[in-house]
Structures are given as C-alpha cells and as structure tokens.
Length: 441
Ligand SMILES: Cc1cc2nc3c(=O)[nH]c(=O)nc-3n(C[C@H](O)[C@H](O)[C@H](O)COP(=O)(O)OP(=O)(O)OC[C@H]3O[C@@H](n4cnc5c(N)ncnc54)[C@H](O)[C@@H]3O)c2cc1C
Image (cartoon, rainbow, N blue to C red):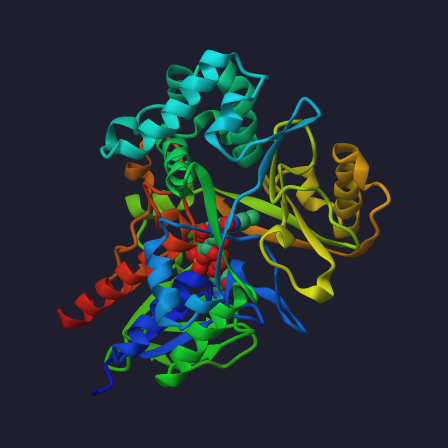
C-alpha cells in the first residue's frame, strides 16, 4: 500500500486512538499527541501486578455494537465479562434494590400508579424512533408528563441535578429519553446486563496504540499540544502544531482534535474565522467529574451500583469487585460526583475532598465504619459530560470545522445519544471516513 498523507491527531482517548488506528490501517501517516503519560484518556488505568485498576468506573451495554466489534478486532473478546447488574438506590437514607422492573414496582417512595407509568415509559422509550419531536421539550416536562410529578421529584430530579447541577433545569428530553432507552435495552430476562474488560479498560487503549505503531504510526505521549497554525508552506502540509517543551517541525495535510470544544478553541482560536461555528464552540458547556477510588480491606456493600438521591457529596457509588477485581487491590469502590469547575468543591485540595467523601460514605453506609481504607486516590476529569440542552442539534459544533482538513471529535459531537465508549468508537469511525473522503477530493 502506498503511504497516504500525514495526519495529526490531538488527544489519545478512545476517540483519538480509534481514529488513529483506523487511518493508520488505511495507509495514512498518523502522528498522535497525548498530553498524559498513558494512552486512553478516561479509560486509562493504573498498572498493578495482575492488570490495570481503572481510574474511572466503566461498563459496556449489550447494545454497544461499535465497541463490541472493535474489541473483537483487537482480540479482546476473551476478556469480555458479562454480568447481571446489582443496582440499588439510596433515597431518604434507605437503600432499595433497583435492578429490575419488579424492583421499580416495589419502590414504595412512589405512588403505585407512578411506578407503573415510569416502567411503561422505559418500555416506550425503547420503541421511540423519531427523537426530533423531543428536541424542544425539557427533561422535567417529559418526565412529569409520562411518569408523574412525584416520579420526577423523588427519582429523576435528584439524578439530573447530580449530573448537571445548575444546568439540570435546562436539560433536553432527548437526553433523558436516551438514558431510559439505554438502560432498558441492555437487559436479559428483565435484568440489566453489563459488560467489563477483565484486566482493565486500559488494555483497549494499549491494543489500539500497538495497532497504530504496527502500521508505522507515531504515538507521542507526554505531548501537550499548545497551538495549531496554518502552514506558510502549503506544499509541506496545510497545518503545523506546537507541542509544549518540544521543537516539533512536522506539517500535516489534516488535523483532528479529539478533545472537548474549549481546549480545541484554545488551540485554534487564531486560525478559526469569527463565525457561527466559533460561537458554538464558545457556547459549548461541559461538567467536570471528581472520582475518588477507595480500596477497602473488606467488601463495602452488596451492590455494584448505588445511585444516591439524598444530599451527599457524591452521587454514585460503584463497587468494582461486584464485576471483576484485582486481588492486590482489596475491594475497590468509586465515589463519583459531577460538578462545575466554578464550584468550591473543585478547588479544594485532594485530601479535603477525600476526607469529605470518606466521612459521607460512612454516614450513608453506617455498616462500613470499621472497614479499613487501604488506598484512596482522587481523579479529576475536567471535561466529563457535555451539557445537552434543548435543540442541541442546532447548537452542536460539527465535526467538520470551517477550515478544510481541520476536524473536531469529542463527546460534544455525540448526539442524540449520550456520550459513552460505544459512541466514541462510532464517532471515530465516521471521522476516519470523512478524513479519507476529504483526502480523496
Ligand atoms: C465518571 C465517568 C464514568 C463513565 N462511565 C462510562 C461507562 O460506564 N460506559 C461508557 O460507555 N462510558 C462511560 N463514560 C464516558 C466515556 O469515558 C467517554 O465517553 C469516553 O472515554 C470519551 O473518550 P474521548 O476520547 O472522547 O475523550 P477523553 O478520554 O477525554 O480523551 C481526550 C484526550 O485528549 C487529551 N488532550 C486534551 N487536550 C490535549 C492537548 N492539548 N494535547 C494533547 N492531548 C490533549 C486528554 O489528555 C485526553 O487523554 C464515563 C465518563 C465519566 C466521566
């Protein structure tokens, strides 16, 4: 195969890595730049003797076809482990099992009719194909109409607030419809099925990196890109990039920025025209995430996933060893919280946040008071969740920017589905096809 043009990919998360893998296998000369010392972005993990301990909890759904195909291609199908989810909900300081339709029907804090209406809405969400009618509707309106006011107040309003904070009241019905659809669709005999990669999700990133290198692609780690500029020698390539602390002199026919809109704008502000596209980049909003991973000596609770509807500093508790664990890590539990970077909590020190979370963990799960903490580590993710407001299709910055050969592909380009691993792979596949198309023009 003859070598095709040279492409730069900024960001080595699942989106950037998959796009780089696909393009390098199609004969392109790919140069990937990742700021971190590990490939993977949010799927990165810490190396342990028997595998990786994920920085952030992740699981797959049975409907994740793009991701499942990629795992097969990477030879990771044997690592796939499917389990029945063991979910709970903390509401009014009481824990309720919340894994099946029967659990919903038994959920006493809601009037019976509203439990029934909520269950029927999940079933209806799976069948709804035309989501465009929901674009102008708020999630709150949609839920109150379909499930009932108390269902909104008791179940869904705390969930939306915990994910979107001050933007919760602006979230589109499309976002919540997708959540209903996704959770309802990953079921077998009424129970939710979740998948995990034994050995850690970092393995996916490592295999992608190895695949890129095998095609003579270059994966530059510890390489923070600080600017994208238009080349003065177009015959060398249209764009150049600057890398922090490095004298980098390659030029590229096309550049893909596989990050959120805000960091992309910081890199390309000087070369992008002041038009509607730039305005969309400026308006694009993301929530951050704090994820405390605590390795306990003993098991923490009987649940894999506990959704917190009460006022606590975290909103989800995920116990990794209910799916798969590493013997040297004790019993890892993730305490997760979404927030704005303007929030006071984001600016507190890691140790203050850790102490707050650990104290709240004992108050919410009193039986854990004597459970020894072996290790605790805080992971901060600045761009964790795009804010999906009404008519998002009109606000979303497109993957194709106004400049030829300059592309943006991050979580904010995923719609109408919510961001997730499966859609990161789909976006990367679409992006690779568009880049190839542009090269052929
Ligand atoms: C708490 C949490 C839990 C989640 N759980 C699930 C789950 O269970 N299932 C699921 O499907 N999805 C889940 N997700 C979503 C999933 O992690 C993301 O959709 C996916 O990882 C996004 O990948 P990405 O490549 O688009 O972004 P990222 O992983 O953020 O990758 C972007 C990369 O770009 C790099 N970068 C940024 N700027 C520069 C620069 N200037 N120069 C060089 N590099 C740069 C960053 O270092 C980063 O590595 C979860 C997300 C969070 C926050």
